[in-house]
Amino acid sequence: MYDYLIVGAGLFGAVCARELTDLGKRCLVIEKRNHIAGNVYTEKIEGIHVHRYGAHIFHTNSREVWDYVQRFAEFNRFTNSPVANYRGELYSLPFNMYTFNRMWGVVTPEEAAAKIEEQRKAAGITEPKNLEEQAISLVGTDIYEKLIKGYTQKQWGRPCDQLPAFIIRRLPVRLTFDNNYFNALYQGIPVGGYTKMVGNMLDGIEVRLGEDYLADREGWNRTAEKVIYTGPIDAYFDYCLGNLEYRSVRFENEVLDKPNFQGNAAVNYTDAETPWTRIIEHKWFEFGKDENGNDLPKTVISREYSSEWKPGDEPYYPVNDEKNGTLYTEYRKLAEREEKMVFGGRLGEYKYYDMDQVIAAALGRVRALMG
Image (cartoon, rainbow, N blue to C red; front, side):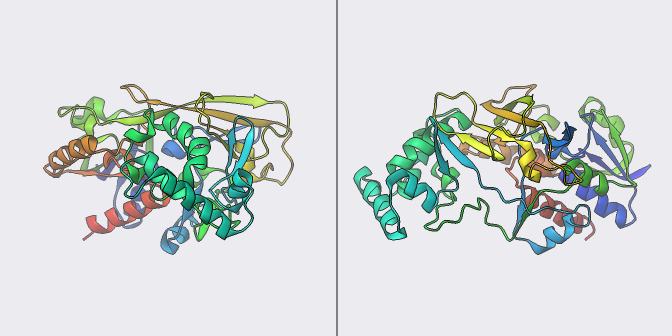
């Protein structure tokens, strides 16, 4: 009946479905959840577009990707500038001159650089062997102890000296007063929320929600010439080689009868004692206004708790260590033998993807399929 069955209505699946449909292919999209948009799904609560599966801020340096998403949504000018809360002390993120001034009282970039170098030398680090040593070599011991150590251990569930250095190698560190976290050429939040944007991508395409592909894969496979699968690659193969590991996240949402809880979209809690990693106040992604520009009288916050993934939990962050990398390579070899199947997206490729990378990968995959 169809040229392509697309398993998953997240960004990768939606972009593939849109592009293939526009090329004249007959597509069916099925989705296990009861909604489209995958982990970028937003739902409206008290007039606020709440990011149900954690904060998503669109950012990219790719003009092709930016032009592409603007076909389906208008973007506001939101800039991500998180705040770090260490036992009531507030610091600017990413690490910049505001952070260094608050931490050490330094005023000039030269003073900040000298302080970092002094602490790096005192720690005796030449070639960083783990995340702890990498962080100290980048920003010094004080910032590591207050703003990185506790947060990272909560995030990954492991001591920093047991985590690979590469996790933090791209940490933004600036000897300027620039607190734009991503510093991308293009950045913003889709007006009306991500669900509306993905809905526009899927306009005119058949979508069936609440359908579990793996429960009847043979039946579903008979409906199409080719299958694009965006679920977990190890689940597709019934975990025959073992489980790939993830970190998961649990959210506690709360509607508050006040207009302002923390004054910023994201506040990270960097001490080890606070059980949550951060609090998101969703209204500030759209400057506290509704779609008509009116101030919103209430607010919605989400506390995020990081946890070790177990079967039944939502998988969020692949654990990109050597063991899991080796296991994924073995699953990838199995996948390459499945002629009817195309594996893609964050779960299908066991890769941490930013949203723009997902879209670029989907566009590239469609081009490859079309020869």
